[in-house]
Length: 263
Image (cartoon, rainbow, N blue to C red; front, side, top):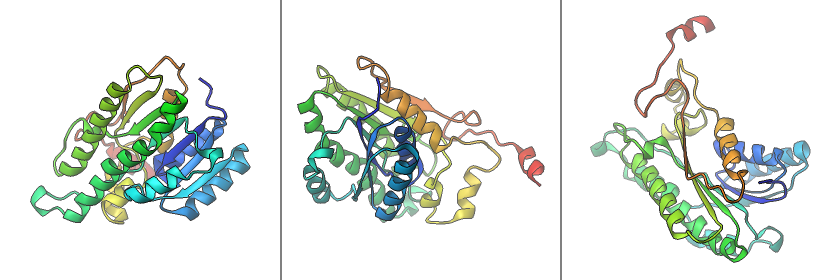
């Protein structure tokens, strides 16, 4: 399936996997709707994509947690951009890594509101249009944390387990339609993820990826493009991808010699 001239709606497009998806799909010739809270970053990305690949982008400053805002913005899209072929629900985050009794309730609410409710609000708003057009592909970016809980991951893992369940449930409910639904479950990916989790503590975030080779956002984006570009009768239900240096949420192999070589 050729993604050229399809319209791809990407949440969380201002950084990380979302930004890499914009780059990869832009290089493939897709039209892009870039969604995030940071409009300036989106506009910079859109200018880069137009200069580099000659593709058009439409930027939306949108907080997916805000249901009235999501409903209003997506229901009033310019007709030129209102038919969505591929939805990439990428917006998500983790906050904190404290034991359950010590965790911040505000962190819990932010994760639940973004990772679960945001995905639901955007999907619910765009799905009727896909059903009307009788075409579309919904790709939800989850995590291996939704498949295997790790210590102190409690609520984050629960939100990603919910994403997996919602992806499966959506596929079941859309049976009999030509719409496709895919879940992407990455392991360690070096993006802003850990800095967000640790509230900007760069040193602590760097330790997550120390002496191992994590996935890149580009790795995940290319996997998403692969799923989206299969023939129309093929639905890839789920892909779990991890770096070679990772075997589970808690088991990673670190290379002590890497630090010595750099020194």
